[in-house]
Image 1 (cartoon, rainbow, N blue to C red):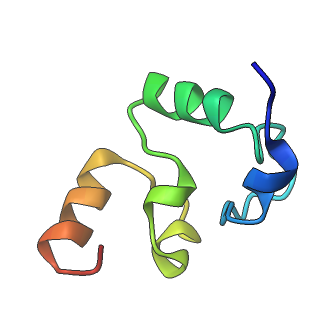
Image 2 (cartoon, rainbow, N blue to C red; image 1 turned 180 degrees about the vertical axis):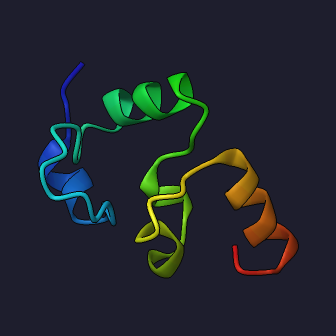
Length: 67
């Protein structure tokens, strides 16, 4: 399967600069789900910058109408 990294980077809002998974969505999703988190792209920019990517944080955002 062809990786579309360059195309994915256009929409990637991950603010962690040294991330080796930026634009490689399959690796990013696998990594974050393994540690019980969601990837940056599931969060609005302001929430993503907190680096709290937990399921609980996402649920609070959904409940508060921010997602």
